[in-house]
Length: 289
Figure 1 (cartoon, helix red, strand yellow):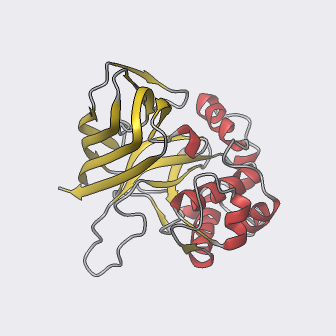
Figure 2: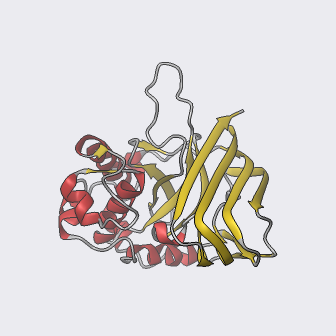
Figure 3: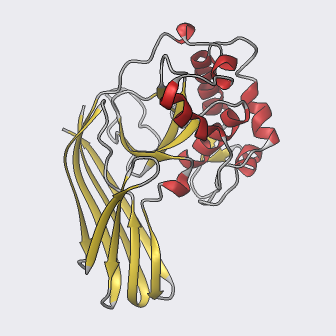
C-alpha cells in the first residue's frame, strides 16, 4: 500500500518569538517493510541553520534554529511511503510468554529488546495495570495468543474519548477511568507488558484515513497515531499491534519511529525566547494512492 502524507504543525504566538530551537521527529523511517519514496520537511519562517542526526533508537532527528523574530512557526512534512508489513506468525507457534520474558540469549537483537522491559518517564509501573494485563497471560500461553487476547480486551473495556487525558496523564488514571486516546492505550499496554518482563516499545506514525468499503472508520484517523511494538523472541522478532483498533499492524500504518514512550518521539519540541501564550494547530492527511 502506498500513501502520501502531509503533517502540518503551526504555532501561533501572542508575542513575537525572538529565538527558537526545535527538535523534530517527523521523517518516516526506512524499514525492510517500509520504503520511503520521497520526503521533505518545510519550515516557515526558514530556519537560519539546520542539522540532522540519528537518536539512540535509530530514528532520524532534525534540529531547526531560528534567529529572527517571528509571530508564528509552521513545519510541514510531505512524504510518499510504501508499506507492506510481513504477515504475523501463527499465534500458536510463538513461544510461551515466560520464555520470552526470561530470555538471556539471542544475540544483539535480544539485548536491544531488553532495554524495553524497564519503566520509562511516561510509562511508569502500575499495580492495577499489571494485574489487568496479566489476565491475558496465564502460564504457558503462547505470547502472540496472549497479545491478541489483550488487544480484544482493551478494545472492549476502554472507550476512545478525546479530551479526557493530556500528554502527561499517567497510566494509572487511564486504567481507572477506562477512557483515553491512542497514546494512552499504547502507554497502558506497554506498562502492563513490561510488568511481566516482556519488551514493548512505543511506535509513532499514522493510520490510514479512508476506511475500506462497508467498514467503520478507524479511530485515530487524520492525526498522529501510536501503537505497540512487541518482542516475540529472537526466532520471531518484533510484531506491531494496535490496541486502539484491536489489530495486528499490516499495510495501513506508516511508521515514523519508535522509543520507550511518547517523550522519545514528540513530533516537534523545543525552546523559545519570548512568545508568551501560544496556540497549537495540527492537521494530518494520509491518502492511499
